[in-house]
Length: 411
Image 1 (cartoon, helix red, strand yellow):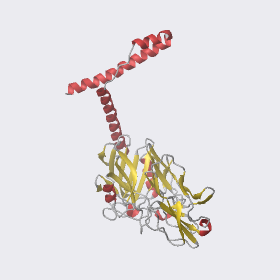
Image 2 (image 1 turned 90 degrees about the horizontal axis):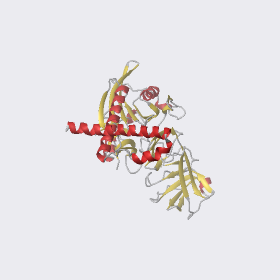
Image 3 (image 1 turned 135 degrees about the vertical axis):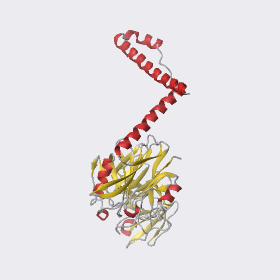
Image 4 (image 1 turned 90 degrees about the vertical axis):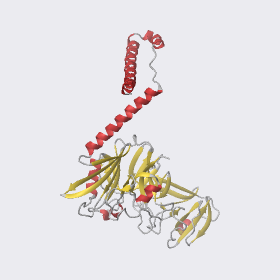
């Protein structure tokens, strides 16, 4: 069997070498004897590889990619415990020291070219936004091999705070112009996100300030979809609510309205909304700035950690001063060759004191990230790998979460 396999590999490489020799000969003849080029091509035919030979060449190529990935990870994380989760997916455990104090770090690095059977996506705890579940439950419900806590959320309700899009559906809008990660079929992007939205018909439109988010100003116009729940949030002072069903205004009231399953509710100042009447046909337009074309998923965080291959922490600009100091941390980023980096840092204990945002930013840069951002941290920091929580969150198994970023089998 070994001799047979060796002969097959030799045959494939022999054909490849012969093909190169013939090609070089043809190129030489076409330069020096152009008149004979057509006759030469008529007489010389390139070798044809059969299906088995092509398969062997692909196997050799994939095996080289796997070995290259293995070597890169070993060089990048010296003295770490490295485990294979699946093809192209590595789990790395290490302890680093900052100012003489220990910090436990869990990293997952993914090469999407090797992990072709999986996809990265945000996942909600439930069908509606006002729910929380442990990361183990979220991971099992989505049949995921990797999960990391996701964006910030309101502790009382579980509503995500910031942009969240899953499978091209926008669930929640941005707050404070914070940074978010866009996930595409062929890679990732990270940028500060704003909402570009309007409600109305034709020229008779109003700006929509957010979707499925808590009200920050009484002057804001907000949209609430069935993902929010059964009832819209309370009406602001001197405000109105407009229920839209099948793109037609079905109800107008100063009270909280039920959200139609085939529509939404708009809530805002009466001075802006009293121009609309029952029965009006209306439209809700939602997009983001920047307008990420072909984006499949968006998950927000903040602040930046790495921007355009440079350490960049804009904590004040994104109104995140409250999360300074050494704490448990979670982060996500990607490398120049689109390797995904997920990180969970334990903190607030003697055996792991946690990281500052600047320390986390430098770590993400050392892991090769050209862009990276902070995720919700503190008590929310929890990482799941192949059926178990691998870090040491303050609450065993991790607190119930609003959402997570998961790596799951393609359907």
